[in-house]
Length: 152
Image (cartoon, rainbow, N blue to C red; front, top):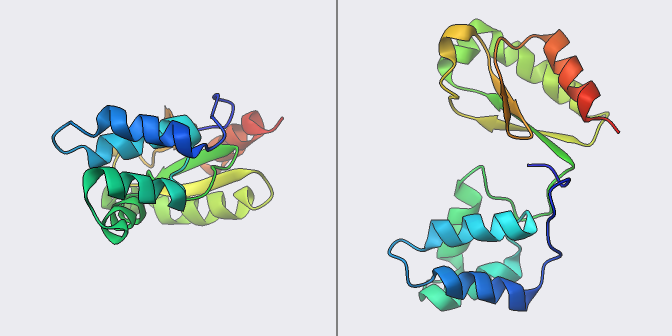
């Protein structure tokens, strides 16, 4: 996700609309949380309370789901997100060293490095996603190129 997409400023009334629109679905919690992420880029604590009330869940239950899954965040997103595969196959092909490199380089930018577990490209070596775009055969040079493209 990149904030280049039109994210809305958090508004409790808008959050309530999103929650109400999905509340009647079976297994509504995850689709609602994804809809909130799509609208606001994060699920703030105030939204957790709205979701909990609408679905007759405790705030702790909703918060537990938000914090369990890597794709949900409670703070507004950084400008760019680099999701690096941390599955065993990518680690065996140098993924751990690439993670150290990616995190060190990202400290100088507005890029967040987050884990993802398997992009299905195991045969091609370490893989990642930059703002939703999948990149295979990852090397430090490819990370540099991706980060360079992300800079304004």
